[in-house]
Length: 313
Image (cartoon, rainbow, N blue to C red):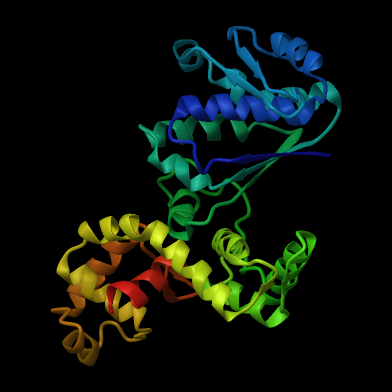
C-alpha cells in the first residue's frame, strides 16, 4: 500500500487540478526523478507533459500540461492511479483533502462526471475523499442528482480532542526551546473550537509572541496580532450581508438556540421565522455558518472571535 496526499485548498480550476493530481500521483509512486520521467512517457499516450524540478528533485517536482490536449484526453490523468497500481503491483490510496473546492470550478458538474466515470472503474487503487465544509461535502455525496451520489461510504469525523491538541502544542513549543503549560495549550485550542487549521495558526502566532515562556499576556498578544491580520478580510465579509443576515449572525454569536422563536425574532429584529430560514440558508451558502450535529456554528472560529470581541463591541 502506498499513500498519495493531495490538498485541493488552493486549486481553483480543472487545469490546476489535472497538473497537481498528475504530479502528486507520480511523485508518490516513484522516488527517483529519472524513473518519473521514464514512466510518465509510457503512461501518457496523447499528452506531452513538461516537468519542473527544484533543489531537491525527489520532493520539488511538478507537471505542466497543454490544456487543449488535456481537455481531449483527461482520462489519461484520471486513470494514472489505476495504471500505476497495476504496473507496480501495489495498491495506491489517493487522499484528496478539501475536495469541496471542486464546486468552485467552471462547469463543476461536468468535471465531477468525468471523475466519477473514471474512478468508479478502478479496481487496484482506492480514494479517501475529505473536506472541512460539511454542507458542501454533503451536497456532493448525498444529493441524488449529483455525480458522486453513493460513490462510497460516508463518515462524519469528530474534531480532534482538546487533550491531543494540548500535548501537541506543548511538544512543539518545547522542541524550539520555549515552554507553555498544558493548561494554556488547552486554552489556545479551545479558543478556536479545536479546529485543526486554526489551532495551528493561532498557536504559531502565539509562539512568535513568546520569548521563553508562554503565559496569559503572550496568548492575548498573539490572538490580537492574528485578529489584526484578518480585520480587513472579515470586514469585507460582512459588507456583503443584509441586515437580516447580520442580525441572525448576532443571535448565533450569542449562542441563541431557538432562532425561530418569537422572543429571539423580536430581540434581534429578524422579521419572521421564514426570514430566519432564508437568512440561515444564505449564510450557509456564503460559507459563514454551517450545521454540525444539529447545531449551527461559525465555519471560521477566528471570525467568530473577531465578530464578538471587535465588531459587536
